[in-house]
Amino acid sequence: MMFMARTPFIILSVLLGLLVYRWAKDIYGTRAALLAVFLYAFCPTVLAHCRLATADLLLAFTMTLALYLFYKYSKRPSCFRAAVTGVALGLAFLSKFTGLILIPVFLLLMFAEWRRSRAAPSSEAVRRQSWSKFVLIFVSAGFVVWAGYGFQFGIPFMPEWLKPNADRLIREKPFWHAVDVLAKNGVHVPAYSYVLGIYTQLAATRAWQENFLFGHISPSGWWYFYWAAFLIKTPLPFLILLIAAFAVRATENTQKESGRFLLISLVPLVLFFSLPRR
Image (cartoon, rainbow, N blue to C red; front, side, top):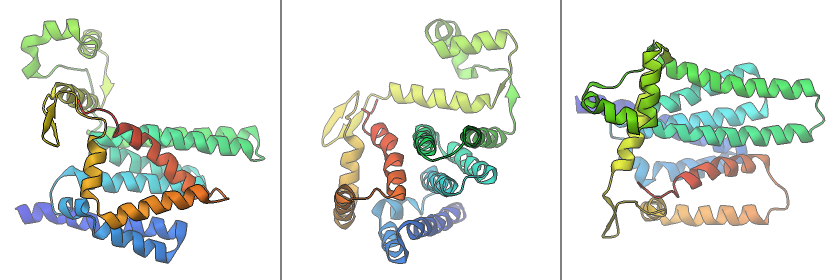
């Protein structure tokens, strides 16, 4: 049973490797793509997680796929490409709640595309069509999430295990107060279980008091926690190449559009993983 459960994730890791190869080849050519997939294949974190039946590798695949499809969309915008990108974005949302970090990433990328369209000689109608395609991406993502929850469309509710404390929660927590108001007025909410899951996850994170790093325990965590883990777990050749890539990027006379896309994608991730762990 464990073998059968883990096999799809091993296959998924291969698909993610192919996606890494394809994206790198599109931007920098075959030699760069071979180097990228080589680094991916020997990454300790990937090797550790690709044989486990967890959502982490699935999230890595769906997030990378969503970003790659948006990159392709930015090259040749169309309603079809926007819808497909939205489907991938919705799958990332369903993979794990961490996938929601793609919302600010996509908003930043959309803002960059909007700025670029303003600089280009295009009509106001063309710019309005671009915004409608951006909306289509998020509408498609929302539809995928709704479909993933069986097109749930019901009245918000409080889980049974919380009902003994219902009065206090409704009085003290804005979320449960809103749930109570909506329930009393018979308002139906699509995919409420997804929203409930997000709130429950955030509440559990805030309640966590034992963050451990370098022999110390902290109730609030450290802003550099994930960066320390990244530096420890990542092979030195990759870190050296990463620093070299940023150095080359900083000294380039011309701004390559694909490089801008990758850098903009990293900004919300850097901010998110620099927050204290609570």
